[in-house]
Length: 253
Image (cartoon, rainbow, N blue to C red; front, top):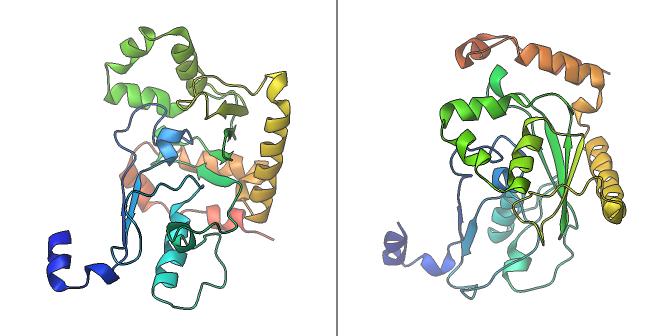
């Protein structure tokens, strides 16, 4: 494809963004707000504009793609968007950039995987809020059935790794990780007095974001009703045929 673009003579005036997926459906991967579930690789190229080999450490997201494409095309920006154009970063500038990046998860399909989470991270720390703390995450056993070698591998792992998987199975309300020293999120710091300030700051930012974005699951009744509605199905085909009621109780005045 790139060779065809070169032959067309348009390569130097073409913005290319390449993104990867989250990989296999392993535990603590996709279907969670751990880094393996929300972080993907991205490569950008604009041969006539950007120098190769640059690395951007800023917190970027796929919500930044639409503003980037519009900016590249010199089209009017979106009136309302949480995204920012990546072009100033990739041009080598130092634009004012977001301090926090937010992510969320609800369910991957029907009953087996409903376990809503919210998360926020800054340049160093990551906070995950589990909206059903103390309830066993159904995705844990679901994945183990698909990959039957995983339980033995977890049991053979070092203690902190085993504890991380136990925590994923039945998590507390908050999980706090230092991504600088613990990029695989094995050591939960949510109960560490030394990290209480970091937890409080991230929890405040996350709560403000949930209110600003009108997160319907701030309402405990809406969460209970959604859980009941989703978990009545064990097969995707039944869920697809269902007339979902959640738009009514999510957005009631």
